[in-house]
Length: 370
Image 1 (tube, rainbow, N blue to C red):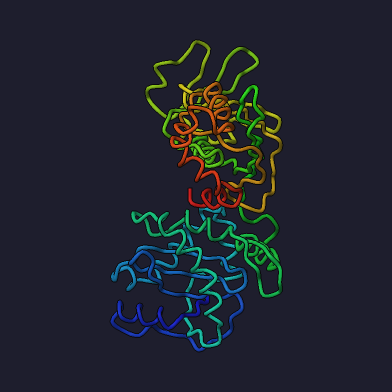
Image 2 (image 1 turned 90 degrees about the horizontal axis):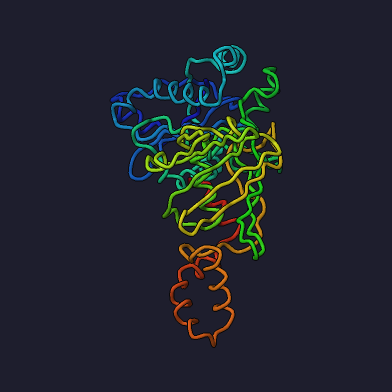
């Protein structure tokens, strides 16, 4: 593994080791990685960026004693990420035999345009710093987000670092579809308002996500505040139903011919197929019912994260009183002379201010941070 180093990397590692880092005189940048030590949330991080694909590996937080053993940290974070992608040991061995050795070779990156690489990689890393888990070093969740962002490459093409890296490996003779990318479910979610026009959101969600993750995605998409209980329900042809919940209390209401499970323990791929229809209920007082139709399963997606791809209709205020309460709210707010207008206007002030920024882009920004 050929590693070009920044001045910051050399300074920090030599300070931690108490001696200079051995450098090789070889200067080629083909299939190399750029190594940098950055400060994220006031703590040191190792950032490794692949020269051609801009695939990024992140180790954080690092203490002095870990920096002194940087070789082990690099091997560990690389192995952890490859495991996360689903590369079995055979494929990992092929990479080491054909492309890059497990042995590390450090060079000083004099001929590497480090500024562009670092600026491109550090911007999303700094945005995701709140998502870091300081109990581990290999930041898999952050690497997933950074490596699935759209990047404009020097030749003008746009792609994700993960796709670009997979293509790089394929060009080197390791075959196509080397990296495990889970299928994605495209779902049309309709908030049922009976007499009103439905509020609809179309989403693409990796099928490795749990139903609890889907719950949080729907909360963002419909501008709910997650104040209340929820459940997913699947009706079976034999009269049985499956109910996925997130709290112990719900198990006390389990019905006959009903299977009940925690939604955080069930992945989408275990229950949904193309054409399926199921129900998401939120706030059992107001009883908001969302009809979810699985419109298609995308077997070779380009992204590994949830995205909102279409939306119609404004969301509904939290605790407005269900379908009837919402109908009354809309009627009053359409008539400033109504005696309840001032009350409803003050009550809904926060909702209306949020409504103005409830856009497809803002929702996707929020989904990126889940």
